[in-house]
Image 1: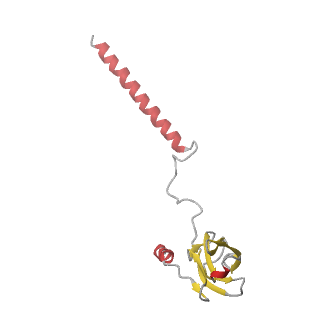
Image 2: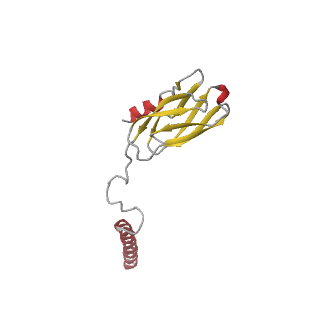
Image 3: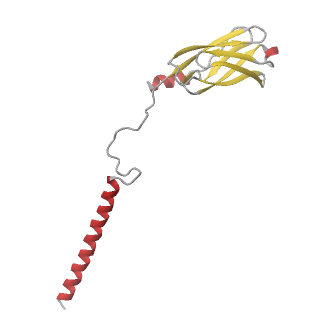
Length: 158
């Protein structure tokens, strides 16, 4: 599955052409539901200084604004959008159109971490904290008894 997703993401973005200079492209052209995509379009060179719009069932209507000779915008894919291919349709102010396809991925992400054990050292004072304190107390007691026993022997032989 990861290799398949990687192949989609690494595929070059090929704009869909409708006229000589009319196109729309979505980058990345495959994205997870809930993520943001960039849209770049052209409505013939003479019309790239006017706002235009794109529509897709993946994100709704978006207005494209002139930016360095192109029309650009960002759109957020609807978070619970089912996985699949969705057309992205450009409508220019001069009446020309173009379209491309956006592939929505909807891979479930885990809601909690894996069940890997008791987690005794995780936050809070739980069983793990008590075990650590008990171990420290036990070692401290053993050291104290060892030192006391060593002094008695040294004193008994004098």
